[in-house]
Amino acid sequence: MAAIVTVTAGCSTPDSAVAPTGTEGGGGSSQTGSNSGSAISTSSTSSVTQPGMLTGPGVDNSQITLGTLIDPAADRGFLVGLDLWKNSVNAAGGVCGRSITVVNSGQAGVPAELPAAYAQLGTQVLGFVTQTDDVNSAAGRATLAGLLTADQIPALTIGGTSADLTAASPVVIGPTADIIAINAVDDLVRSAILTKDGVLGVVTDGTAASANALEGVRWYAGRAGLTLDVQTASGRDLTALATLPAVLVLAPPSVTASVADGLPRSTVVVTTLDGYDQSLISTSAAAHLEIALPTPAFGSDHPGAVTVEAAFTASGATDPGPLTFAGYASGASWQRLLSEACDNQSLTRAGVRNALATVGPASVESLIGASDPGLPGIGRLPASRSSAVAQADPAAPTGMRSLTGLIVADGIEEYVPSR
Image (cartoon, rainbow, N blue to C red; front, side, top):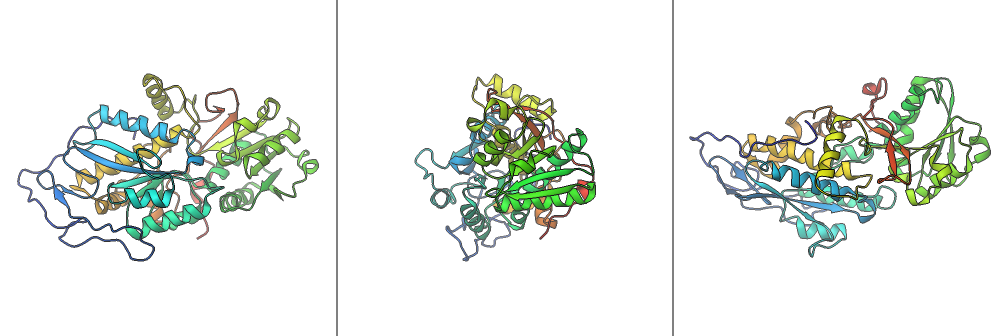
């Protein structure tokens, strides 16, 4: 799938198709969520808007409505990218003859608090895009996943941990924390910053995302012959770390800034997007600080990034964030699912769930690589095994500049996260 897809309006429906009747999910049977943890009733009478097409909540003759559940702390340009996708696909004719409408949490009278926003939007939308802050909202993320799974409402999210692959919804369509960390360390080896028998420092705060990233790094280190010097964020020894060629920081931005400031420029510091806040980074720290990302950074020569950045510029927008590409990728992934559901004549939640299993991998030129949303549900495997690395640059529009396009570590296809 190219990053911007021109979609032919409408989908073919045989003239002889018999219009189905019944409730959402088809087959004339009721489709309701589990009582366990359910915040809303998902039972809804279906309507038929064209011969043979079954529709459900959030779908009518002219539009498909999706909702967002976005933690404000985790937005960082995400909604800008999602809105860019929506406008691009609508300008190209929509999906299945319908325009896309997106209703956002915290806007237009919708509560900003995710459980309350979910309860209000759950009966109005076909599905959701979610984005939560791994550092500050781990409990909220788990609660939200429990509600979506119980109510059987499809949702997509870019990031998460390998533990999140067990949730039926939201489906993690991007690389998980362990995949991002593996690729980042492999890039250090490929760049000859680390030798295959060298020592890598790791500073971790022990959160779920950090633990998952460390799990992936341990796997890679075993293959590459690396030795890990693992330290806690609160007990880190900068004197010892200063002797190492590279240090991976899996901790909040304040820790990353302190480590980067305290280590010599000869030590490359790498963190994740959750560990990076450009406002905390000095010019000297930025010179040897890299950020591991789920998508390419602005300025990348990756084909998908080039196409979307051009569309961003053409739109007149001027304020991208580090997650703008992630927002666009979330919308593009929904587009693939909607097109698949349209071809199967079921624009319903059940139809989308079926599409997750059958749509197959995206093009390697997409912003999250050859992401296959069926893999988490089928084998609890990451949907994508590619990610990118950027150089910290507080003066750049997104606080960073591209170092790599999407990269895939040597042998990463053999990695199986713990279950």
